[in-house]
Image (cartoon, rainbow, N blue to C red; front, side, top):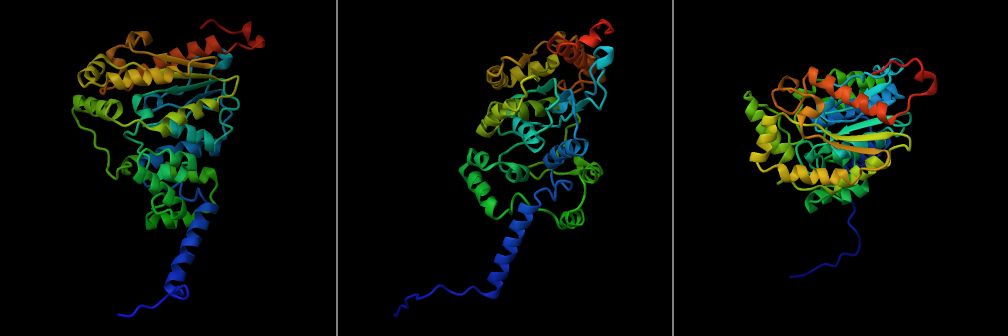
Length: 359
């Protein structure tokens, strides 16, 4: 048996050169046009985030009040303040979204750095799942791989997913796995304005998109089973902690302008859902989240952890059937509570003091 010594590197074949050229062109395309696909989401997570992101880009709001919560605050529209401070939609901006985590909140401000410039009150509601790898966030979905920083990728808890994220920096097979139809739409829309992109994403039914696991969310018809599902996916202590989320929480609050009051609030549940959390052993994750969030309490940052619905004068009809979300009557009471906090923390300008009616 004879062996031959390699005296030179093998010359790539034309097919290999073509593959390398396509790889380079693809990488250059995504570096040059990172937002080419944001109006054409592939999952519910992408749809929920980019819809709010494009709203901020298109409107460029100078809001006095920013509401950056979860689905529990999506219906909130305005706060009943003094006559000259009745905030309509042009002065209060609600960028809440379902399953909004600290990482998603921080990303929105990273992509829209001027969003808080004129803000006097910044409201966020908190849930235990926001600091964990849970429903809506898993450290390896396309949105996270596409938008996370290198440091965030290095914080991924799973070694396999960490290597996947780092590999994606070179060959974006996971972060930019788009359908042929969305490739065609993105190429046609390369010159679209933020408003045109917003119009495009608003034309999409986000509920028909799969979640980050590739499945479509199916809610049971029985309200009790819905409550059990929410308890399992949002509060169970078995969900692993996420260092990405915990650091994102600190970075999020570091973006607060000095004159802005931040309110971190945990809203109460209906009694039957609160009882279910106890029965399912979910209290430990809730208590741990409370300790974590309350560390941020200090000048300009206010933490309110409300357990008793009576605090907001809630009755059973103020809760949706799931026992977590508020009905329109409940939202009105939440708005009243936020308005009271606003009046306590933000001084009324001198020219408005004389004419301002009593709340």
